[in-house]
Amino acid sequence: MSDLQILQNNLDHFFLIITGCLIFFMQTGFAFLEAGSVRSKNTTNILIKNFLDVFIGAVAYWLFGYAFAFGAESNGFIGHKFFAMADLPADKYSHWFFHFVFAATAATIVSGAMAERTEFKAYLLYSVFLTGFVYPVVTHWAWDGNGWLYKGVDYTKDNVTLSVTYQDFAGSGVVHVLGGTVALVGATAVGPRIGRFVNGVPVLLPGHTVPQAALGGFILFFGFLAFNGGSQAAIASAGDADAVALSVVNTILGGAAGALTAMIIKRLGYAAKYWSLLFTINGGLTGMVALCAGCNAIHPYAAFFIGIIAGMAYVGWSTLLIRLKIDDPLDAVAVHFGGGFWGVLSVPIFNTESGIFYVGSEHSFCLFGWNLLGVLAIMAWSAALSFPMFFMLRISKQLRVSAEIEQKGLDIPKHGEPAYPLASYGDGWSELPHNPQS
Image (cartoon, rainbow, N blue to C red):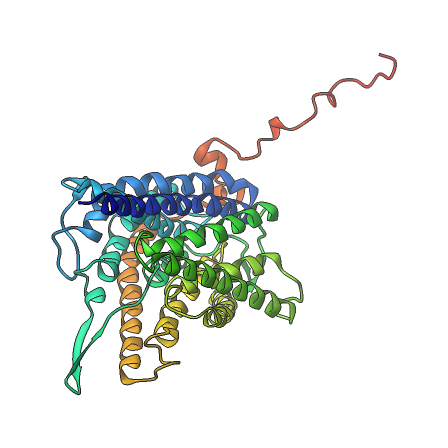
């Protein structure tokens, strides 16, 4: 191998490691956003889950997840080599790290939707199952060379062989639809928080610190630039930098369009006429989620349009869940499932080389059909595995905390560490007798 090839390989590894670190930092954003969006009595509980999404996720992905996703020995459904990184070549370590931080993101989506009333041991179980098996299998389908969605199907027309493959560059379906589907099943199984719906009427249970939630939103917006741009997985070859730059620009535009659309819908009279900060944040996140699938393959103006539809999708899914009396404190289902589903469908429509909007050929519609099949398969797989797990936990009374603990808060009985202990407040002087002459 020449010195130039060594340098190129090292640059590609460095690119994966650095973008992986930035995606890892998204866990900080999730922590701030989720902590700010729950009541103060449950802050420690949600924060430890954010930490464990990383630590449990690392162990599960090391032992099983990567082997199921990218095992060198595999079939169309699942891989089966590199368990516990055994025999994994050193030049794959950066690849392992990059995909681990994606897996941790999928697990975090679920914890937010089930916040403030879920048993901690139930969280431990579904976190391991999701990171170690549910998510890696879908990753294999879509992103491994032997996966059935990745390989697609070939057909011949006019003596020309055409390939139909799944298009999901950074995981609108693989990460976000999967996480959103599991979150939807989990939130349905655990039931709404006490007081969320009174006589069928929704009652707002506001989080305890909007500034903290806003800071989390900013960090997530920042992380999405690496999430999407880093999915190029290389930077040293011709065209890599252009693809990364296009992905970053499209992600920004999609997020901007989603945020502005959601904000305007709220101001025009959705529920109440306000310039809502939280609506704006979630609309922006939904726009960026939608751009994950095709940020490398569409024009910037198309990204802006996709973001507008994503903002509408966020409002629609959020409204639908309330109508169905499904309680999602973070609106995680609306953001990730709503944005991700639309994102997967948008790629074969607006792909600059083969999209329905530009080409409109039979092949374009076949590509759309394959992406639709792919996202439906991801939904079916996620629901089929999570449904029995959550409902068995519910039947065995291991899914939800008692009514007393839920009403008083999870931090003290479950963790012994209130986020804001009253004993730590005070100026040290107010308890002394007031004597102006002393």
